[in-house]
Image 1: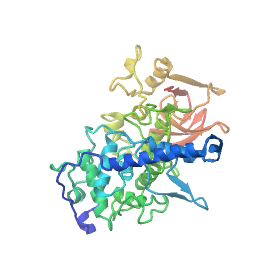
Image 2: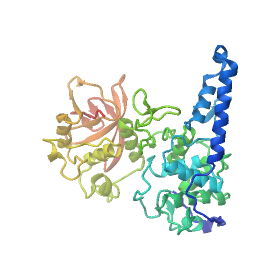
Image 3: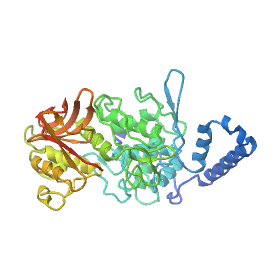
Image 4: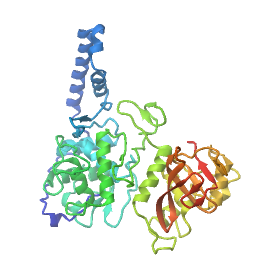
Amino acid sequence: MAQGSIAAGGAVVARRTKTKPARTPGGKGSSRVKKWLLGIALLTVFGVVGAASLAFIPVATVMALWCEITDRAPLAECTMTPGGQEACTGGATLANVPQPWAEIFTAAGDEFSVDPAYLAAIYLTENGNAWKDLDTDWPSSGCCHGPMQFNVGAGTWDAYKYSADGGPPDYMDPWDAIFTAANLFTHADGVYGSVTAETPLGDVARWEPGTFVYSAASYNAGPAGNWNNNETRRYVENVHALVSSNFTQGGTGDYGEYATYPAPHGMGIGEGEGGEQGEGSGWAGCGGISGGGLDGVVQIAEQEYAKGIVEQPFGSNCGPTISDTYIATGCEEWCADFVSWVFQAADIPFQPEPGTQMYFWRHPWQIPAVIGMKAWFESGGHGQEFIPVGSGGPTKPPRPGDVMIYSGHVSIVVEVDEASRTLVTVGGNESNRITRASGTFTMGPSGPVVGYGRMNP
């Protein structure tokens, strides 16, 4: 989110004058010429060198040219320098960015000479790595609003607001919000750090001035804010991962138990549409996309744990997020509510079927009671299954994304070590908070395990 007081930061507001709406992507002509030239070059290589010599042309070179010509992602946006240091620059394409978002980022980038891929990474990180419809009812908090989460109260929006079509600027409008973010990065060099096509991505662990990651930290925590916090670290990690992978993955996690963002999803991206199914799940092509399904369950559970959500008042079974999101709405013992919400957020919700409707008494995705969740998994109506645990352990080894079920509690398995028969779970309503804990296949963190619920998406 764009935080911080602009007045306190001493930034100078500079608004560009527009004479016509900016709702068309720029640079199309030069891009088409480039692709034609690249196509001719590739054909020339094949024609001159001949089939006998093609073996001497690196496959990566040919594929990189092909991906560029066909508007697909290049094979890599990063190179390894001597010593193993990753050197990435802001040269990512928008091949994995769906329309109409690619059009907006391109137009804003052309208008303000800002790398459109960076704007896309900021948008995704602000929105949980989800490509949403333009008419989404964008969330608001006490300070921040809209698709780019501008801090309206602190003056960030008022200082840099910009209309993409000449009308009154609206922070809930994706065009205006993204153009405003580009305006901010262009005219707040000394405060947020300038972002251009030549700006290096930077080291995710160092956040040096003059890099993408430095500006991302400023945007999230404010240029004068406290950057030494879990949220900003996860935020910067996600921006880095998105740009360096050309928008094919979320944060990879270099911060111990801190949460990672799920892989980008929505509007067919990362959901197996428009590409081949690779091994496991996800889209495979130039650049590749993976994630979703049970991987998404694990990532979302970890992300919620890292937020440090605690009951308020302590021991009340209530609190922000707990009452209005997981329980939706009210106050109650919420471990099953939390599990239900995570699976729904990962797009594989629990669903009632004949004979199990009684377990869903509040919402169509939510099973509020542990006994009902166990019975629903046992019913197997949507491909789910229940794996019992006996004296010899579970009949099948657990896997990440399974639901660990006790006689009166449930949690989500996020890590499994079959060799040692140990695992790690994330669960709600554990010690009045979301907790990450370890246990064994038969004795989880909270005691004897009855069984595991397994989704088979």
